[in-house]
Image 1 (cartoon, protein in one colour):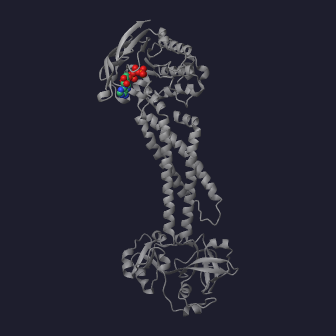
Image 2 (cartoon, rainbow over the protein chains, first blue to last red):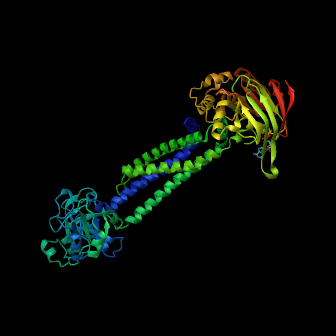
Image 3 (tube, each protein chain N blue to C red):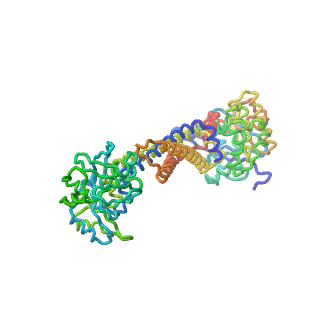
Length: 380
Length: 228
Ligand SMILES: Nc1ncnc2c1ncn2[C@@H]1O[C@H](COP(=O)(O)OP(=O)(O)OP(=O)(O)O)[C@@H](O)[C@H]1O
Ligand SMILES: [Mg+2]
């Protein structure tokens, strides 16, 4: 480190220039990571919160948007209930609607029709749970839109009126749309297209002749493995584990893939920038290195010194970049799906440093090719 | 082996060929040279006559194709690459054209780095710099030193690990006359005081008066010119 640190001080302008690029890359990496986490939460927090092992959709349903595409019949539920290792299997209705609150605000909702006392019924942070036919439990994030307990939400076009009776614990969104839980029977009434304008009652709900739903939510017994393929076979369904089902939410796969790809590009750019810098830097120092080698310095000593230099630069400037990125993330507007999470940020920082070091390592390897003879006069 | 009478440098019949095919040249042709501790030998000769090649062979940077090279009794041809680097650190000092100091290091740090490379972390840089009259510039980087000052620091750096052999390649090439005399006088003084053998390659006939012996290299062969 003796030489490394003194060179850093001596050539601080050059190192700062490269370091700034690393810092900017780190800022971008942090912002992308925050955006990524934010989009994931926005896309599937409604699913993530569920104590579900797997979802089963109608056989052959296209994976993308499977939740709102799939249509299941009542008799497809029983095979899942009977399947080995299954604790509970419940029907779930999913649809996305436009609606207007009683103070005229337009909100989009993902309706999750569930058994009001089943295992996927929502836990509430305030208000009551689901019990009345026209009651909905909505995502806490809707409070930002002025929605409160008692707010009446009117579904566009069919004019069905629902009343907010509670809020979920934390964010519950699906495909960037806030979730509204409601009793499955009410969901079926709405899905049947026979709902009369106004407030649905137990009587109108019971009168609806519609028993279809979107998916089966499956919960495995503790420590039990459910044979999904066998149950699928019996029920005529296609199932996905909870994490697989994220990809079945609208746009999820496209968004996360795009962001991951940009992140990968940034890592590659970081490796290339650091590699290019250290290549030029090593070539610039070739004369000095030849002198050191002639004096008797081992290549190993010089390699170690140069890598230590790269580590210092990467640590310092990645640190600066990450700090700046976190600070910028903290002042992001609420409208942006942005979530700073320690885990992904740590991973991103480590990857930036490791990839940068990889670039530096490839570059400083040319130290081993420095010929100490070059130090003697007339051969430089 | 390392008795008083062992010569600091003993080259016997060293031959070195460089290049391939048609461009193959005999850089050293059966060169023999013995230098005692404390002796200051100058080597002159036209460009391309093999002077740098001689230093390379004496300094364990190149192995001769035939013949032998011993430094303070050690046969250099028996050393592996790593061992010869270590041997250079401990036994051979190099002084290069215009000093070849590291631009990032102060004068004192140049010496400290040389010490550290040889595993000595407690180099008294100030006193070694003082012995070459450079103690007052210890905190200056090469960019803020004159050519002569740089060369003095280069000499101090070469001496820091107390080598038995000092190899000097055209130390006055970038200096004016007065400065050249000072630098070569310094080398002559150090050779005597530190009892170190010095082999200096130079084009500068003005400075030969400070040397104990002057040899001339012509087409790879070494011969006597005169005795000072
Ligand atoms: N790497 C090499 N490959 C081929 N030939 C070389 C190489 N290095 C030197 N030579 C040749 O070997 C001969 C001796 O070179 P050397 O550098 O020892 O001369 P020199 O006396 O130091 O010259 P100068 O005074 O110009 O420094 C020259 O003819 C040179 O062209
Ligand atoms: Mg030469």
